[in-house]
Length: 129
Ligand SMILES: [Zn+2]
Ligand SMILES: [Zn+2]
Image (tube, rainbow, N blue to C red; front, top):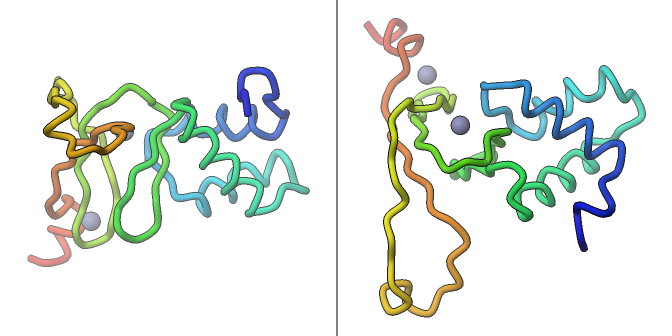
């Protein structure tokens, strides 16, 4: 499906809402926001559109092992994730995606590369000490 030709109104709005956020929301969190503007939208629609937007390179999907998070900034950039609460922030550091050869990719059809730091966020750190 060519996303550029068939961008539904719902998808426009989901994309617009996500691009206005820097908190890397889960689909559920984004659904809560989109619902305020489109009360009839379903969670399934939000999920489907987020997956579609991510597959087509309009947004980034951050696989966290738990619930996926989404990022309106589709340019590759590093993230830092809290091991305690799961929150994800941007890391303001320039990283270049490592180049790999076809042989190094072991026959995989490479779709992308993500760099992630992890640790304990300031909020969680305060609670520990
Ligand atoms: Zn935390
Ligand atoms: Zn990000």
